[in-house]
Length: 352
Image 1 (cartoon, rainbow, N blue to C red):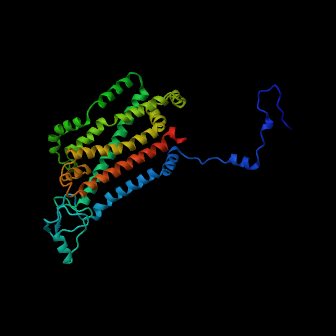
Image 2: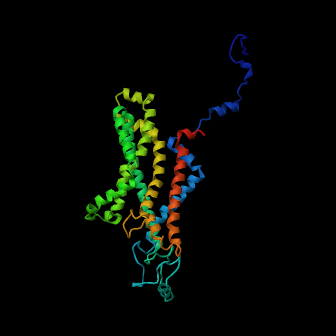
Image 3: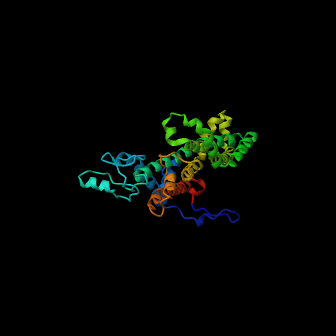
């Protein structure tokens, strides 16, 4: 039966529409594949060529610094010897170059592992020192990001969900912490903790030194405030939503609501901020090591290697190039990965 439009009706005339064909009906029945927020974000991330390239570069760096010490027979603090004898001609060698004593030993039928990046001014293999320096930088970056994640999320969640006077007091504490200069705090902590930690028999503390321990403490004290502010802002926008009110009405405790309902809805901000915190921490550690506030010698870091290479910059420029290029690769890769995570997980950008 044909449907006709009443002349006085404000409805659209049904005659303007055509009936759907069988093919169009079958297309309407096809539903998109069910997926989770994380899987959907990772699928979008894998379509970003810069983010994928950054992941590949970081994986290659991690594999290299993990496998290299198992293959290279030198230690980061070892002054290279040839057949058990001190070699005084192996200082500041170029990449894949042998000293006179090593070349003579090779001519006699001996085997010497090549110096992939040459040697430093003391005759130590430079490649293995760069590898251990990259280890220190990555450990500092990951450790700092974990501290920022844990402290910032907990503090911001409590402040944002509680609100009122508690939120006001907690945010004023954050403002005070923002005003503290991190360099001054590191120097003061080094002065206070040095006599205490020098008597420690912990091999990790002795290897890293008081300066590096102070850097870790400063990251835990100062660098979480940005994460706390972002998490608090997210919670303020979602804590009055219907599902939060429904959880409150059935008697759910605040800790349960924050853990099960609020934090999962802030996961995009948390992932992005944590990823971008890693290169910031690595650059801070490299800068502090460059000015002599990093790990204690002979333990290397990329910043301390670059600082040591300044003296022979005109004669042996590659000793500065190697750690500088590695710092650039690590920081740039993490920044590009953080941008890719933002594009993949940020709800405001997912529809674009």
